[in-house]
Length: 251
Image (cartoon, rainbow, N blue to C red; front, side, top):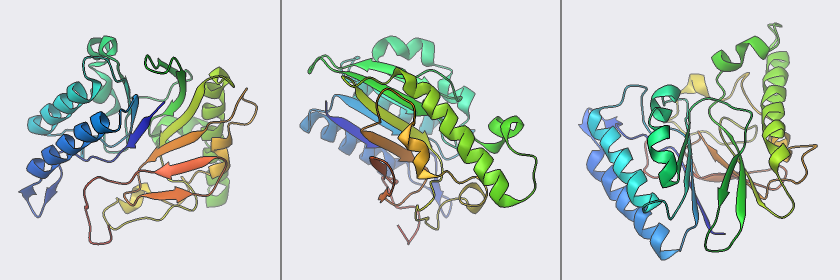
């Protein structure tokens, strides 16, 4: 199974008030061509499709066109999770319409893994997909202690539990994948990320992606949130795809 991992498109983002929609559309053309040339079977989009929770209509149209072209009528499945810039419910609102076309939209954290068959190889991908687990969504489960280390441990532990719960569907004979949009300890930040959203108490230990207790470990973990492409040390292969277009000089 050939998998394409991408994230942090930030459609609708501007540069000093200037639209970047034209270059973002060019990126979609590049991505579609890559998916065809590399004979990709499955696409993972790890959050931040949009730059804001209320994106302009042109940005939404570009995303819908991109999803339609990439899925190729359902021949190539796509699994998309919301990031901290996306409105989770708005992103997943069209899920009932596009599910039959092989496009899986996941807005809110769930306990269920996504299972996607691959017609070309006969394999099945089992994906522990966790959309951006904000402190607001997990707040009732976090420690009430004010000390940052205690909060960090509670947050990281809860993320680990959610991933492990989904990973119960993993099988030694399947393609087992993990996917999320968050800040992992050891990741390198860039200038264009929102400082309040990365680092600090809401940092996840990479050990969380080991999915301890699951029937099998993930062969690959696809992350979004940090705009610089990078690999993070931890169990298995853990990678940030990075943003497809530079949004700061450091990128």
